[in-house]
Amino acid sequence: AIAAVGGAVVGAAAVLLGLRMKAKAQGEPEKADPDEFTLLPPPNPDWTPGTKPTSPFGGEFETVHIADLRKNDVAPFEFFMTAMGPRMFHLCSTMHPDGTANLAPVCYLGPVSEDDPHIVMGVTRRKNDARPKDTEINVDATGEFVLNVVSSWCCEAAEHTAKRHAPDIDEFESSGFTKVASSSVKPFRCKETAIQLECKVVESVDLQDPDGAQASRVYIAKVVAIHFAKELMADGRSPTNPAIALSKGLKPVILIHPHQRSCVTSAFGDTKARSSYAAEFKACSMSLNDIAKNGDPQAVES
Image 1 (cartoon, one colour):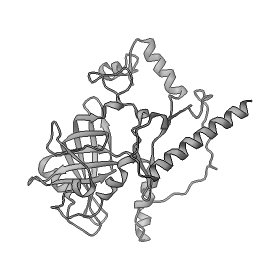
Image 2 (image 1 turned 60 degrees about the vertical axis):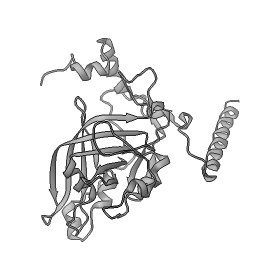
Image 3 (image 1 turned 90 degrees about the vertical axis):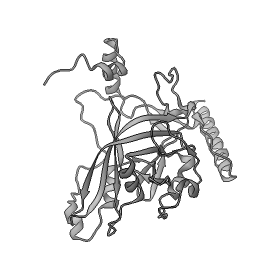
Image 4 (image 1 turned 45 degrees about the horizontal axis):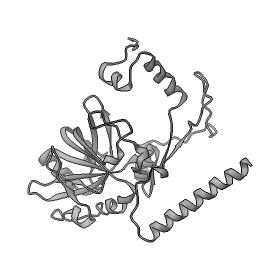
């Protein structure tokens, strides 16, 4: 009986997946369907403190020194990107001082502070091309940019912005994105993305390649405003105490290889270890938000 029920569930899921694929093939717009998100159990529910994790690999390692790749005339790009693991895919919106809007895909970025939210973003130079990209020119001139989270339904349009467009080309128009005015910065937001972060630069650092040429300009920027689709508001939350629910159909795109992308449609819940110290906070009548604001009352001085 259990097998029959299991088979029916699998069969229904296959039918549903088939209908969704058929709809996409017929050109129907993609929907933000919470039913497409799967919450999985933690992968190691029986783990106890002190228990050594078991790797599925044999324990022997290949060691690659980046300098050796250069000696062999091999660019480290592909190897480095796959070693770093999945990276979020964003569109960076900037504006030239003359008012020309620019859009470009970025993946060298991440959060670096939460009390006063800051992010770090790297804009690389093309090899053997000393000219800065439009994104770098515009950010240097204005000190502002907007990060737009790329979801599955707008991935193709986002990828199109990576083409080498002339500086006077408006990538919003060429890619099909709709401009929406920002609230605190001049660069526009992309209406078709579900989350947008307005940022103001506080510092920049240049990184050089082995030949001494500029390889990347790294920006540290303060996040001054975040916009998100109302449908993504987590249950029980409000604009005065917001939280975004990934499970409500965001479907963010991540880069796992220079030629491979993935879409986040599943996640596992709190691990046993995470749940244990979350329980300790609860015993102190403190939420994670309280900890973020006031610190951990059980913190041990080193």
